[in-house]
Length: 235
Ligand SMILES: NC(=O)c1ccc[n+]([C@@H]2O[C@H](COP(=O)([O-])OP(=O)(O)OC[C@H]3O[C@@H](n4cnc5c(N)ncnc54)[C@H](OP(=O)(O)O)[C@@H]3O)[C@@H](O)[C@H]2O)c1
Image (cartoon, rainbow, N blue to C red; front, side, top):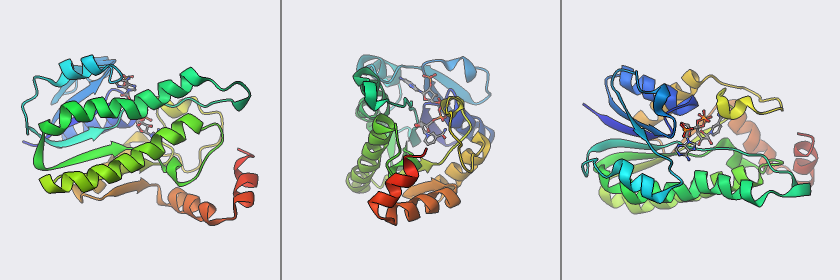
């Protein structure tokens, strides 16, 4: 039986992935702070952990045997929009700590748990294709995840581990429920999970969706900076 550990599996995209992998016969380890949402799902074992706390991360995963995971999916994340009139350094630190620094704690404890020839996936965001207003913290954290995935890909190749970077567009989850702006091509968590599992099955380096949004962002990024600014500042 294949085994996946999903960090950030208690809500939204991660919860859907946990349900879908369990339904497909995988043994699923689902980690997050509030594990009440995953406790009763057949085939899913809950692991309570705040990944911004290095000690908790060490304790939560220490009993996992080495080389026992086929797939490690680091999906946890948070988003806070910033106001440059009153730049909130604590909010900035919170987002960077959750979306980036905590990945370091997870990688420290979990890379040895991943079997040679296995798969590592990091959830980034389609936001990396273009700077968005008020996304100084979130965008910077996901740009860093993009680089992190690239470096890991080079270094883990020696163990036969493939690294996938997941770049979702807008998905209807508690994270985006707070967004006050229009979210083009909003997807359901079920649609996102299907795209992610399909991409992981093919060991794709980048799993970016929906295509219409990704191509729109890539085209916008080709425009002169002054045009991009005029369009994006309206958001
Ligand atoms: N939804 C979108 O449109 C979208 C688009 C692009 C990228 N993403 C990315 O996709 C990932 C999942 O987002 P989502 O939309 O599914 O959001 P969500 O419903 O808010 O889920 C976030 C997950 O991360 C976990 N998490 C957050 N902080 C944590 C912490 N300190 N320790 C442990 N777990 C923590 C949460 O668990 P607990 O709260 O139980 O700890 C939850 O399981 C994130 O990385 C997000 O940036 C989402």
